[in-house]
Image 1 (cartoon, helix red, strand yellow):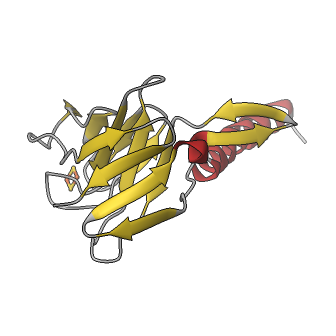
Image 2: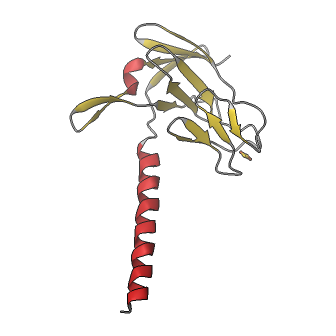
Image 3: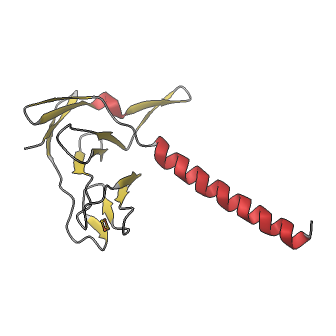
Length: 146
Ligand code: FES
């Protein structure tokens, strides 16, 4: 094999590995939490944010939840020890389902980005995400759907 061909093939292999690692990381981060729903109120245990990695307790930045009557999931972010946001994952541009990536959500259709507070960071979307009203106590997060 010629040197130039070898280097070109190595470059393709490295690029492919980076893309695959990125895809696996984003899939691995999407955890659907167990919830209980009654009277338009979702109860989510704060312990759903805890995960074990190699025997060490760590915290997820977000968990996803589904409600039967909603078309899209809700992404619940833990902003800090006491602050959470519950964002409806419907893009405000043309209603595609958003994909969470760490501290922000991306629209796969036309590339809009939203912060973990639901604010538009990049167009074409102009409106912020629907941010559900929430309350918390020492054990749970309560998300008001109505
Ligand atoms: S539908 Fe999300 S950017 Fe267009």
